[in-house]
Length: 185
Image (spheres, helix red, strand yellow):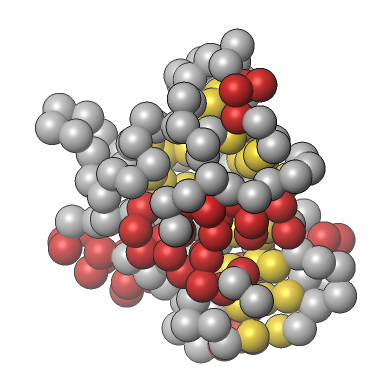
């Protein structure tokens, strides 16, 4: 299945990090399989995570699951601790994003990042670093929502600091809703 390939690409292409930050983050990234499993499962509510497949970024299944969700541990070269748990629609989305084609999302999809995340841009899905004068978009714990037609999100705000849901990458086929659960630290 393209699930692991899509998600490896999601991280590798989308999260370029300055060398000093990557080295600092790599020191904190979980190293052994048990630590990676615990870190990955921290991305979602415990009842969902306990039955999810846990997959490492090198395609290794660390823990088989039964509920159709896949959790990934922290990405070692991103500037934050950003494990994620994704449903099948998000896997389709990631495959489209990675291959620079229209995502084949055909229903509402959900993804959890209860530890938060960092992105180089809120407008450019392929930015590998913030634009000059900009900073990383650090989002606190959040739920991500993807829909089959990203144009349906055009009425929602794009400001990650507005205190409520916002759209990331608005106006692109990769637009999705970020629903804050807690404030970014």
